[in-house]
Length: 483
Image 1 (spheres, helix red, strand yellow):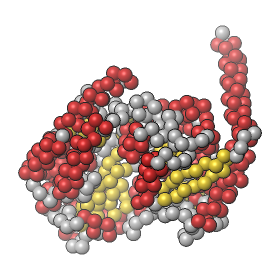
Image 2 (tube, one colour; image 1 turned 90 degrees about the vertical axis):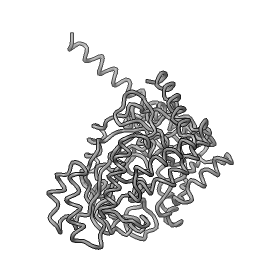
Image 3 (tube, helix red, strand yellow; image 1 turned 180 degrees about the vertical axis):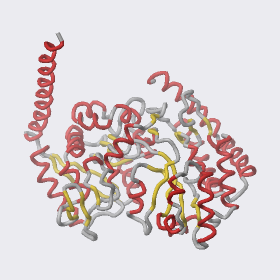
Image 4 (spheres, one colour; image 1 turned 120 degrees about the horizontal axis):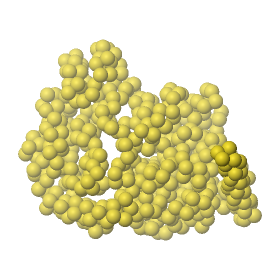
């Protein structure tokens, strides 16, 4: 009986493949019978391309896209300081654009304004390969009340925390073996003491703003100060500033300051790399990525469990504007961009021999001052697994990220999105208080047993309890409907 079942199953698979292929071809053929459509695509860049160099890339892309989708592409690159200002102005003015990069809270805010189209049906129909590679849980995590308003980038799908240290100093003082054995902060102190005793012009540890010992607590922060404990399954929202864990972490940071590990002055002067070790958000190969743009080479130590949280799923998305005149072709373009290696690398790195040199089949060396290239910004574009490697990157980078994604611990709150509108005023007031206290606590500048009670009291007067209650209410409603 088992042998007889094989033939119809194989036939069914073949039939479905033919049908899907026919549907895709039919969509493409339909495009050829319609008017050519220009896709206006807004992108952020660490360095905005030179106009002539960008036009050469667009020309090559458009020649390729003509036969594929009957579309032309116009890329609008802006630097970080101007990017969201421009997007927000276009959203407010209901100006026409097709696709834009977006992420984090800005994505959620504009989605709540109906600036972006619901994509569930478009993804199902026009981006099945992208949907498959992203996976159900990752797509779910980026939803707002069950709706996808953005297509997440297929990259590292989670994160963890730890430290980065300077390799040259570790080797100079024979600390590598000791560093390889580090499991927690207690293992780090004897190493920091060596640097402190022997390098008077180097700070052993950088703690500042978003990155301090408190980072290792790994709270699943939804919107400050509301969070879930890591691995929590009880659905309880907490104000993480009020937790005993936060107080203990702040005390450790204070001891680090008093021991002379941290700088007392303005933390921004630490950007000159006059430190040995710093806390960081990590992923496989983060140390190589950081080292490529720094004076020194760094090595990472992983200290927390790799997790997929809601924040990880909205770290990089492409949204289709509600002013887009042809969302079907916009989604077809995103599907092609995520699956076609030539087109993908053309947009990211530019033209071979002009903007980069090919070292081997899968590795390139960017040509400096060529006027175009997005090395270091690959994470914003889509499917990193068809990127060329940049010279110096780990040859096994993508294999390691795939394995990392496979083993991520999924947050129990994946898919929960907080609507901040009911407590908008309170959130603004609490953010101001965060700005007042966070730097003081994260650098250990004052006694946390005195400062944190003041911090909590000011947050309460600003409405933190109302925020937590509203978040709990929304979470309970969401959990009853979607979990």
